[in-house]
Length: 135
Image (cartoon, rainbow, N blue to C red; front, side, top):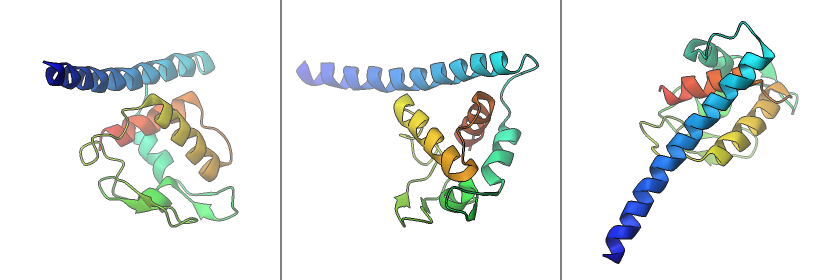
C-alpha cells in the first residue's frame, strides 16, 4: 500500500510540474500581451530564428544557442566555454526537459544573458520554449 501511494505521488508530481511549466508559458503570454498589444501568440518559427541567430555574446565571441546545444535538439551538446556536457533539449529524447519551471526560468535567463547580453523578453522566451518543446 505504501509503495502504491509513493508511485501515485510521483505520477501526480510529474503531472503537476508539466502543468506548472504550461502555467509559466501562459504567464509569459500575458506578459507579452502587456508589452505588445499586437501580440498574437508564440511562434515556433520565431523561436527557431532566435535559437539559431548569432550574436556577440557576453564573452565577446560570436555565439548562438546552437553553439552549445547543437543544431539538433535531440543530441547532447557541450558548453563551448566550460566544456560541460549538456543533455539534449528535446523532450522526446530527454523527458525530464521542461518539467521544472524553476530550472526553465533559470536557464532561459542565463542563456539569454550569455548570447544576447540581456534577459529575453516574454515573447522571446515563449517563442524559444515553443520551438524547443516541439522538437
